[in-house]
Structure formats: C-alpha cells, structure tokens
Amino acid sequence: MDLSLTTRQEGTHTVVVVGGEIDVYTAPKLREQLIDLVSAGSYHLVVDMEGVEFLDSTGLGVLVGGLKRVRAHEGSLHLVCTQERILKIFRITGLTKVFPIHSSVEEALAARD
Amino acid sequence: MPTVELHFAALPGHVRTARMIATAVSRRAGVPAGAVDEIKLAVGEACARAVRVNRRSNPEALVRVALTDAPETFTVIVSDSGAPGDEVAPGPDGGLISAPALLDLGDAAALGSAALTAPGLDGDPDADQPFPPGLGLALIEGLVDEVAVRRGTDGTGTVVEMTWHTGEPPDDSDLDSAAYAALAAEIAGSARREA
Image 1 (cartoon, one colour):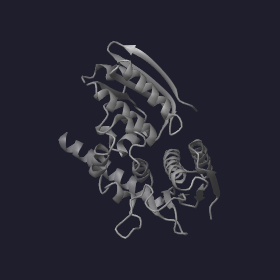
Image 2 (cartoon, each protein chain N blue to C red):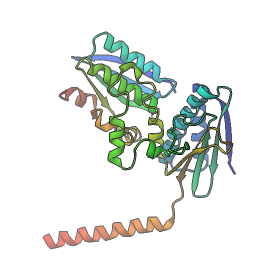
Image 3 (cartoon, each protein chain N blue to C red):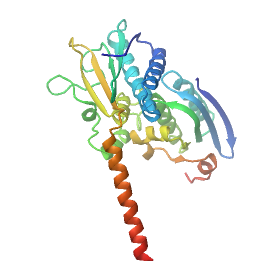
C-alpha cells in the first residue's frame, strides 16, 4: 500500500495525517510535504501516524529531518502513535527520547512545547 | 538448505518486493505474527542497505536473499557485492566489526545515545538521507534474535545473517506459568496478611 498524506490546520498547529507504508520508496513524498509546510511557515506540526502500516529507517530519517527543520524556526514536531509495532521502532532506535509521542491528536495539540 | 532464494537487481523499488516475499514465506512457515512484523522490517532494512552498497560499488550485481525455515528458527541471509568498508566500519585488521560495535550498542542506554548523537540530528537539515547509514543496522540489531555481519565467502561483499527463534520450547512456558503461579500465590498471601 502506498503512502497517503492529508493536512489540516488546528489553531496554531498543522496536523499531518499519514497512512500506509513509509519506506525507502515513499519517504521522499513525506519529506517533500514536511519541507513544503515549513517553507510555508508551519512550524508547529503534529504527525498523526495511527494509519501507518509500515515504517523503516528511511521514514525515521525523514521525521528527524522534519524535526530539525521546525526546530530551526523554534517550532515543534509531535507524533501521535499508539501502535505497538511502530512504537517499538522508536524505542529500538532511541528516538522516543527525541520525539514527544502522544496517544491522540488532542493530547498532542494540548502539549506544551 | 534455503526454502526460498531471491536474487534481485539493486533497485530501491525491489526492496518492497523482497519485504513482501519475506512476509509471505515467514507466514507460510508458521512464524508468530509479531515475529513476522520483525522479519518484514529487518529484511527490508538489510535489503535497502545491500541495494545502496551495490549501487555504489557494483551496480550490475544482484542482491541475494536466502530464507530458511527450520523447526525452531527462521533465518534470512542478505548478501551484497560491495567493497570492504561499505557501511560496515573496517576493524583494526581491515576486517569487519560487528553492528553492535559499529553503533556502540553495548547496552540500551548506549543505543539511545548513539541515535541521539547520530550525524544528522544537529547537522544540515538536508542531510537526513540516509540517517545515519548505521540506523538500519541498529534496527536490525534490535529486531533480530541473532545477527551476524561478515565478509562474503569469496572475499567481497557483506553478508548479514539474521536468525529468529520461532520455536516455543515447552520448558519455557512451563517455567513462565510456574513463576506466574508462585507470584500469584505470593500476592494472595500478602493480601491475606494485610487483611
């Protein structure tokens, strides 16, 4: 299954809803989306990963790249993820210490940056 | 004796195909669902790495994957045709050092710090591809029960051998249920004492 991407504005935050597989093949699409958002002035991002079926190290790299971009503008990037198999990937790589991970979009939006 | 062997051209799009085959073969072998997810991801990482190495060192060479289903293990061997040092740091004697040593994965804390200090976190924002080359190996290390990284038998290329223990030795589950029963008895005992 391919990557699906939709974005919506929630106050000061932009929610990026990602679905499908984020891998070496589809990750460039997510990277472009994140670059476009930051270029357009969206510095507070919430990436909703509840619909993600597969994530590999390329996908992790794109998320880290997005985090670096928003940080350069003193922004934030929060993740929404409750799927154990995806959370495990963040734990194995130590990235749970890098990304704030929430169990719902509402919780992510309420988080203090 | 591999049950399935796959050779594919070093094209990123084929990594997904290899992943699907690994998923299908492991499912057919009766591997538990959680381990199938691990196999799918680890095989994808190993193949993506092999594709990158071959494209740089030997673009015409095929990436080779062998999937072997044994009674209590499932083994996947991914081989590239790269040159010494490709994405696996050469050891003092010019040979390979293991993925854990490469990534300083001695313990869980080191794993976390390795990712935190990885190049790409603080560097050029456009340099997030790949992030970092060793990240795929770090994931493999975390997903696979036994991983060995070695030089190919002909002296070129790198072989990543990944083994999952899929068998469920009855002794273990007996031990678990016995331990659980002991714990339950202890909790019940302390509850009675409190009451």
